[in-house]
Length: 163
Image (cartoon, rainbow, N blue to C red; front, side, top):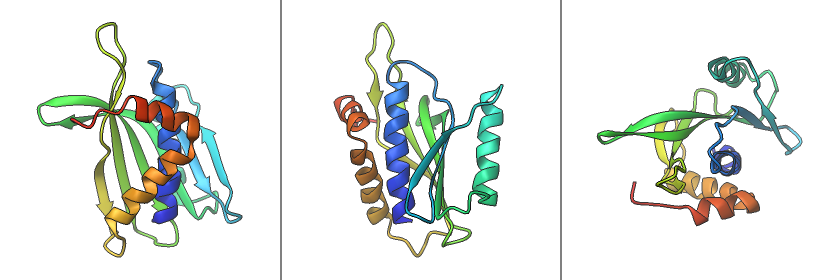
């Protein structure tokens, strides 16, 4: 789960960079292949929901014969009484079948009255991951964020940890 969290951090930073200007994120699918290479694809369909379902099917089937895979898409999550825009990141590490991890990166879109903000990541799912240390995975995630230098700057410049 360490390598998939690094991949998730990298693609999450890229996603934050994309939405920082008010754009909607085109769902993306990324893998670590057997050669250790990172491959990222945008999932372009007529409707965003179709792209998410396509990505979920790829996660489940592993038709890319990947070591790890990540799907990221724009969504909304409740935090307390309020709903936040969030990047949803679904992860699979195929050496541990059945292990599923899902995170959300809540953010506040830029408006005329409010600047863009990135909030603390939230785990939505940690299924069959008892063999993995959560703190180590979180550290790997932020190592992935930092590895995307330009996007990490946007993330760090707009970080608001109050949420």
